Amino acid sequence: MCGIFGYANYNTKKTRGQVVETLVEGLSKLEYRGYDSTGIGIDSEHEFDDKSPVKAIQLIRQVGKVASLRDEIAAQNLDISEVLENHVGIAHTRWATHGGVTQSNCHPQPSDSKNEFIVVHNGIITNYRELKTFLKTKGYTFNSDTDTEIIAKLFKYYYEKDTDLEFYQLAKEVLYQLQGFSIIDWC
Image 1 (tube, rainbow, N blue to C red):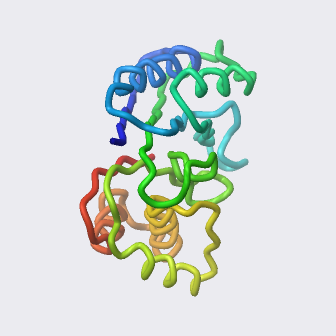
Image 2: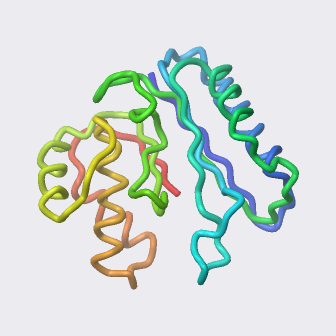
Image 3: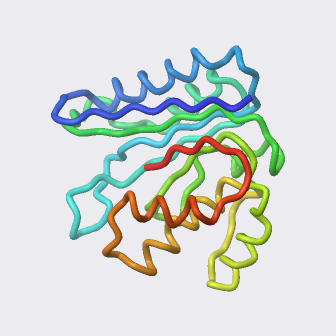
């Protein structure tokens, strides 16, 4: 069974290392549920773009247990000493329902190569094939076999359609399209 763990702070100084450790420790508490892969999405060391003070999101995903994710995090050589005053992160343990047990199918799933939106998801989107077909007609490409990637791409689609939407409005637009049973977290 999948597990979701999220962490956010505002005006609370923490190092990137502390944020990562909180997320990974949260996942370790979900290990009893059974899963086949893990992943986290964190504030990266880089700005999202030249016009924004917002940090880009970095994904670290791995097939296997939380210990394998820890090894992958160590291999990334993150600047774990950087102090972040505001930070957010999501973490996920996945039990494959759509798509095999591969690194590209691990969560979080991104909306695009810049990780503008990332999603973790428990459940099944029963109309994901129809949504995927629709998004392909709009020029979107897919890198996984998961139904979760559909959600991330829908966020991107509706955001590009109307950049003036408040986030709650954007979430409503996406959620209105989904059929099935799900628990979803996004950044």
